[in-house]
Length: 74
Image 1 (cartoon, one colour):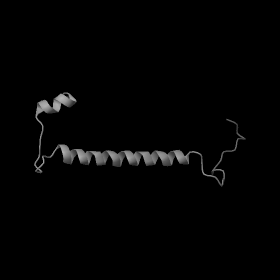
Image 2 (cartoon, helix red, strand yellow):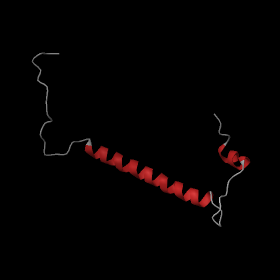
Image 3 (cartoon, helix red, strand yellow):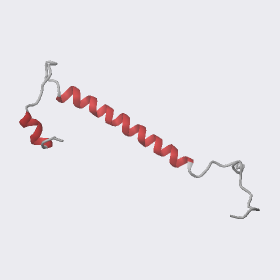
Image 4 (cartoon, one colour):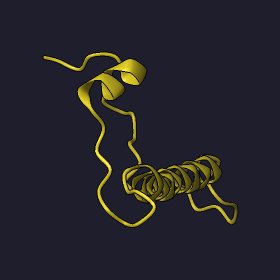
């Protein structure tokens, strides 16, 4: 490093928006859409597939659960 190199202590003043800001905004929007979208789908799944028509809990047997997802073990 040169001892005569001057380091910035503040950003350069600019009337324009920084180039990275639109990417940050779009990333935030997609994360929120994904979170709330998955949450809505989960609520629909939980109410439609885990409850019977009369509102009682409709559990799956072990055979039903493993036939579509495969065995889940550690």
